[in-house]
Every structure is written in C-alpha cells, then in structure tokens.
Length: 451
Image (cartoon, rainbow, N blue to C red; front, side, top):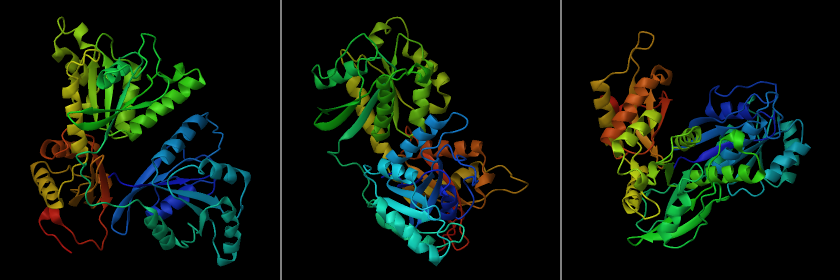
C-alpha cells in the first residue's frame, strides 16, 4: 500500500502551518499572520511509532485570494482531502466556532477518512473548556497549542490509531481487479477501445469531440483475469473549459487518474502532441501513476511511418518520462490491445513490489562507490542507510547527514540506479531524504548495522 496521508485543513489563520511545523519538529511551512500565505500543498514525511506517513498542509478554506488564485487553492485542498487517510480539521480556540468553521465542517461531513478536530491555540488549561465548544461540530476534539507545545504526543497517538491497517502482504492478489484509467484529449479513440474490450457498444462513440462527459467504470475479463476500465472525458485546455459540464468532467477525469492503478495516456497517431497532452502527462507524473503512452489509430500510418519516428517524437517531448513504455494499437480492431493490457499488468506488479532492506542498502552502497555525491560546502554528503517504506508508488527513504547537500542531479542518478537494478524499471519512484536521528545507530551503507 502507499504511504498514508494525514491532511491538515481549516479556515484561514487558525494556525494550520504552525501545527504542521510543530508536528514535523522543524519549520517547513511559512507561518504568517496574513491570511492565505499557504497556497499549494506542502508535504513532509513523518515517522509515527515506526510507521511513515505523509503530512500535508493546505491553504485556508473559503479564502478570497488577493492574487486571484482562489480556484487554484480550492483545487489543491480538494485534491488533498480526496487522497487523505486521516484529516486534521484545525480550529482556533480563542476565536471559538465561527460560521466559516461550520462551512468547513459541512464540506468534511461526507468524506470517508476519519476526521480529528484539532483546537489550536489552547495555550493554557483555562482555555480547555473553551475548546470543548467545538464538539458541536460533531467531531472528536483534541485541544492543543503549537506554540506552547501542548499535547503533541496525544495528537500523534490519536493520528496513529486512525491510520489504515498496515498489511505485511502488499503484493497484488491473483484475482485482484486492476483499475486502468483511459485518458487523453478529446476524440483520440478512448471509448472505442472500451467497446472493443467488452465486445459491445458499452460507451457512446462518435466523431463529435467530447461525447463522454463523465467517467464510466466498465468491468471486463482478459484470459480469466478481471479488469476495471475507467473511460474518462477528453481533457481540454483550462481556458477552453467554458461550461459547468466541462469543469466537472475535467475534475472527474483527474479523480479517475488518482484512483487508477495504471493510466493509459492516449495519443492520436494522425495528430501532433498538444499542450493538453503535456498538461495531462504532468498530472499523471504528479500523482506518481504507472503509465503507458498509447499511440492509437496506428493502422492509418503503419504503412507510411516507422514506429521509431513516433517513439523518438514522444521521448523528445516528454524527456522526464523516459521510463514510460509505448504501445502502438488500433482500438477499433483490437490490434495489439491484448499485449498492451498484459504490459499494464506488469506495471501494476512493479508498483506493488517491495525490496528487502539488505538488498536495497547493498545497491546504494555500490552506487555510492561507483559515483560518490559531489562535495557540498567542501564536505562530502553521507548516506547512512536506505529503506522502502511504501508501494504504489514504490517509496524509498534515504537517511543522511544533510538532505540539502544531495543535488537534484545526484538524486536522478540514484533513481536511475533503482530503475536499472530493481523491479521498478517502468514505474514512478518516490524518493525521500531524511536526517538521521542522533539516537539511530543504523549504518548499513558502510556495512556497520547498529541496533
């Protein structure tokens, strides 16, 4: 399973970023008295009782941003809530419940993730009774103070108790239904492929762009294995989203990508790659989803163009996605479709793979010996040990003496080593760098494993 996400939400200026920094143990998010300082999501890898979680800070709900970024802020908040395993609903004890707190509470009423109401700025015991007023929001209330360091251990324990079960067996079951999102810009043949897969006119197909207005789940079997195909609306450039239908179609398609195990990104062989394709590819990469570039309608060009030309075109356009496999298919006739789906199953298995810590550290030790990290302020950065802490996407943590000292170029080198030597050759990998705690005596990279 992936690393659980603990998302911090609330109205502006209740101290969400202060709570975020307090739980992280260091200043990461910007803290300011001015509302709306946090706009994008800020994340940090946090260890809770031997288990890792991603702590996510978000912008203030209900804020009218002075720079006209309200829609962007709200979108980031929705993305965070949608992916959350636990939600921390932060309120201000000194202000007491205000109408905007109630509005935020309404937005959280139908989420499936457990919600904790964190009454921040409860600086003294005398304010505890004031924090109890938030019970009227219908949530478990924990009165804390980020500035006075009150009840941090209690809050962390409550978060840990609400995390999803951490199963040791994370490999996909043989009969597990793999979810495949079929995405692309309009009129690339996505719905035609779904009809071919289920051997029926399940989806409406038309030469009119935008026929599919909602994401639709279609179950089918291939060689006795179950699949779930998610047919999505065609993506449009943001400035072209002119109606409510278009707006919600885009958001549902993005949600389909987030819940998919593998994404099939469709291109029309007869059309050039567009800005929409690039935006869509960026979104898939941002969500760390295994992906196949699917060049559809290849029968129209097979005789006049070699596949190598389109491969070069894709690799030159998406330089950071060199690990993504490419399939050439004809969705209408089903040519090469079975091979594409078999390959998507391989990607699913790769994303669920787990590498033993000893093997991972042996590989990192060899990578460091082959190409040591460059000097940083006249000192060589040290990596003490590595461990895999999650799957889907495979998530690796490197414990080192100074995470800032390892350059982006060197991190790309390590990711390349992991792809070449481990079972993650064609899927995204999350890589985190963390300071080693002074009490942590593990030093596997140097061959000296401590306690």
